[in-house]
Length: 436
Image (cartoon, rainbow, N blue to C red):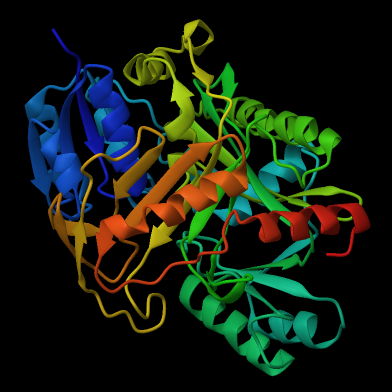
């Protein structure tokens, strides 16, 4: 008899996870804000609703009597949905709302680092009045990152030297954040190569995935506004060619210390933790911490994961992760998102026709914020289709994505430069010179 798993979420990373769970024999009950045709096609039953009401969703889930629940998107994890499920003795493989503060409150994350002496913290200030905002941002030449404390979907952070024409605009934005949230987080701005470390944890043991890098800027050569992510890469040796060798081990150590600090703070974190780092010219800094599978980088690691993913989730929920048998194929991956024209500015969703006939084993098409059927989808205002390829090098994987674009017909935009040889070589040169 197969295990019944309730999966919450309808995007690309949930599609990738759903397929892995289905492959390992799970029966899927899914709750989605959009009628994702790929997830629907492998689910026994679906509830399509944009509601994040914890009473409604927990009631639906409990009525189905699942053996385990996995809540994926951040917007659901910050509610008390997981708390309600745990209270009703439903097994979960994801963090409670209090443990999820590591992502839902950037201020909590910085203060946790300070309390437990976790390396890589940035200089920061939490400001709660307009006078201090004006004073801090106008009386210095230093550059800052202005951040809302809560969830922003990767789009709320603004850098004083990149997103504003002058300090007056920066101060106005910081005041807007303050007026909405009653506080604003101001951090020192650092320059370098950003990357993320994802790990599976039961609150005690950890399994590290390949480190990844995603590309938030809308246009090629990292230009334009930030998005939720236009694509991402991982490499063969579970590292990246432009990350210094000693940096990877330091990043793993720091990531694990977040799990330990949360436990010492009385919060057992279960699920996927991913930490975003910045390799600077001579140091390593923590940019932010997230309490869930990354999007898009989560799709990269799910593409190359080997082992029973259903069993992995049960091992997380049962605090038996040390017994899980999970490895990662020694393959590089490149992912590129197809998005509606005008995405992030003035989106104009179109119909996409998708041909998966004869799709090679090393190329994967994941369905994100779309509705319709597997061979024809209606885009929304958000990211639509992710194409991931795996190969012996990042540029080869990038080329394989490009060679399979003929499978998607319709109007869309994407970044072709992600994972290209030129792009990688430029990053390696920056690492060598430290010229960030």
